[in-house]
Amino acid sequence: MAQMAHSDDRRLIEDYLPIVAISAEASREKSVRKGHISTLHLWWARRPLVACRAAVYGALVPASRFVPNAGSDEKKKSLGRANAAKFVERLCKYPGNAAVIAEAQQHILEAHADRCRWQDGRGRGRGGKCDQAGVCV
Image (tube, rainbow, N blue to C red; front, side):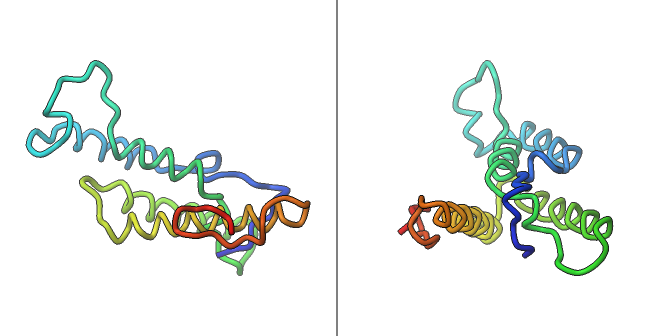
């Protein structure tokens, strides 16, 4: 993982999300009729789980998470977006893979710890170590 530069603290949702793949999986999820929470009641406004999962993950994880360390800037940006797209597509498969979801949770905790370390340098935060609940200790 590339070190996050806090002068450019862009989140994945600001940089790139594979919208076409997320949309396709959300459409597939919408057509599931057995074992899905939406079959209990007809909702006025459906919120597909896979689209929400992608949006929340993209908002919490920095875009630099998937950028490799070596190569030209253009090559790193292209590879970073490709790596992000592959992971987000795996994350958004319905009904969800527990191992991929756990990996996403780890990415979020690491991003939070990076933020705590950065804030600690300015007198806030407490050392950048986070427990499983994401609380800096």
